[in-house]
Image (cartoon, one colour):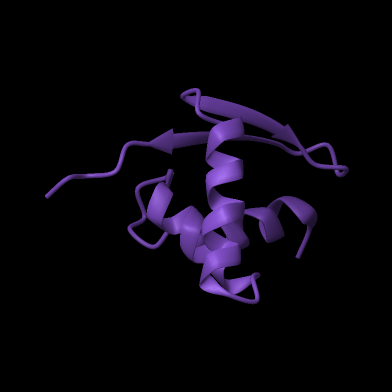
Length: 77
């Protein structure tokens, strides 16, 4: 598996609703998996969302792959 396929595979694991975007909930779930406590996850998620509070951010991986992350609003249903 090359780097691009690995990135796509990982993204698809996180993108639970298969929308092609990572919702705030999906980002939070990912951060929660990597945190020791829920409070730590909430703090990390808030810091991240403050940084990418714009509609999107582009990230370049060392492999040369460029990801454009779009933050979608939370549904209030």
